[in-house]
Length: 96
Image: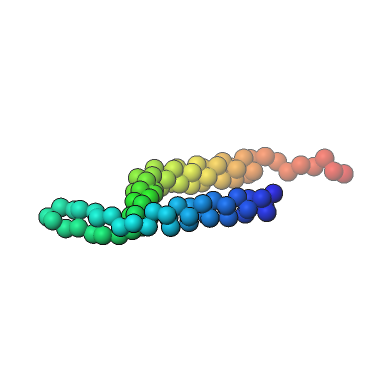
């Protein structure tokens, strides 16, 4: 199964590499204040993809931090509850 997964990854890599090579023409990105930048199309698309992923992860970060804090608080509450119930229950004396 692992070999099949690596084979699929390799095929996908070759396809994407071929796509990048075939679309290596330059594009001009125009920004504000007459600023511009020329780069290969594949590089411009890669930068757009990476920046989108980074922005998406940054948007999820506050919710992730809140969830981790909530989980940590619930874990402390569970530990306290376990210690209290262990202190109240008498030891098991059925062996004998």
